Length: 76
Image (cartoon, rainbow, N blue to C red; front, side, top):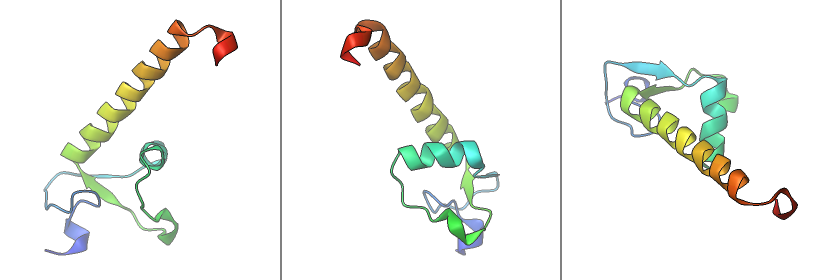
């Protein structure tokens, strides 16, 4: 298995890859994953990992929305 054919997150081979774009890089940073994007490479991830990242982002957004609704603005 070569790194070019493997998902950057799970390192599994796949036929369906997605390049980690800027919006996904921000989510990856929030997740505290240690990916060095400064190498100017197109990092790819498999569809399963991409789906997981978007699910995480939606979950976090829902939690923050709920928190903002439950707490008075003076407690934020």
